Image (tube, rainbow, N blue to C red):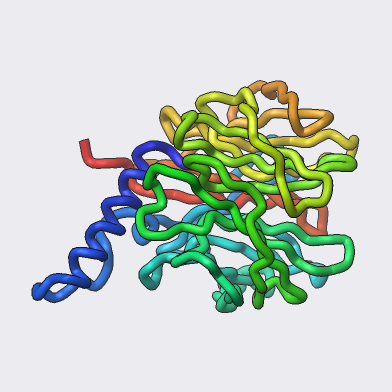
Amino acid sequence: MPSIRLVARAAAATLLAIFAANSAVPALQSPPAGPYTHQVSSASSTDGLDWSHDGVVLLEHASVPCAIVTPEGRLRIYYVDASRMPETANVAESAGGDAPFVPLGLTIKGLKSEKAVDPSIVQLDDGRYRLFYYGANGDPGAPGTHYVRAAISDDGIRFRETGTALSNPGLVDPDVFRAGDKWLMFVFSLTDHTTVVAESRNGRKFKKPRSLGLDGYGTAKPVLLDDGRFRLYAFDQRTQQTIVSFVSVDGLNWSAEPGVRLYAPPGKEITDPQVVRMPDGSWKMVFKTSDPPVR
């Protein structure tokens, strides 16, 4: 979930791109702010509580990561790709070990917006993949109704849009997961300045959202624990320096766990943590890092 200054930087990058495209002055090679300046990095853990930075950058010019482990055991990251403008969703995969993440070229047939940002991926029981994203036109932080759309795919790379999953003013950065017999979507509301939650029975159409009750924290999709509870990793939106965790039995009511799971690297901000369990039982966290704003 974004901070206010993240939205402001994204808006500045969009305005610069528009100005450059319509100016006689040659365009810059890259925008100086927004997702282009973000990176995706990772951390590792043996128990999901004590984490260590891996010390490597997985993806450059990349933002808002969402991770899954494929049936073949490979780590795959869906993210906002700002290596080209306008920025939009892409997916990259690693063969494991120290192998680099290679972009696979995500496509969405029938995309009804200029770009698909803030991707969230779900693996369905029938083997298909469902992608949720904010269908943005122009400035992602613009006021008005925002549309979280869904797309379906057999391989998790080539998608076909299937329609709107949720619409409401100011929605950005959806995260979708199954909780018992229902689906939940955590999504940040720029209008309400907090994370809201919407429910669905079929995982395609979601009801009007309400507050999740975790003001001040940016959330991502939680991970299912061995005892049936969920653990939610969240970053402090006020400082963007720490990642903490909460636990829940139903995905709706959360209790804070003591301590800090991970601190930001020196001189960086850390946001958007997403955790998966690897085939060997270890835990992997991917997250976005960025430079603090100039004060």
